[in-house]
Amino acid sequence: KFFHAYLFAAIVYLIGVTFIVGLTRFLEHRLLRHYGQGY
Image 1 (tube, rainbow, N blue to C red):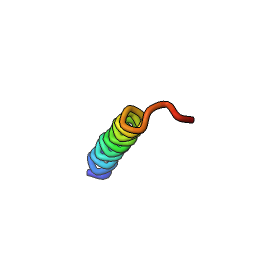
Image 2 (cartoon, one colour):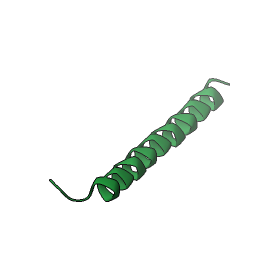
Image 3 (cartoon, helix red, strand yellow):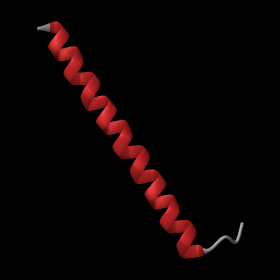
């Protein structure tokens, strides 16, 4: 029971981290393209 809960928490954590990193990189890419490479 404890192992299943730990496994579920680890999967949710990995999905959350992947989503946040992907969203951050996507937003950075859009902002850089929108404002151009001024710096």
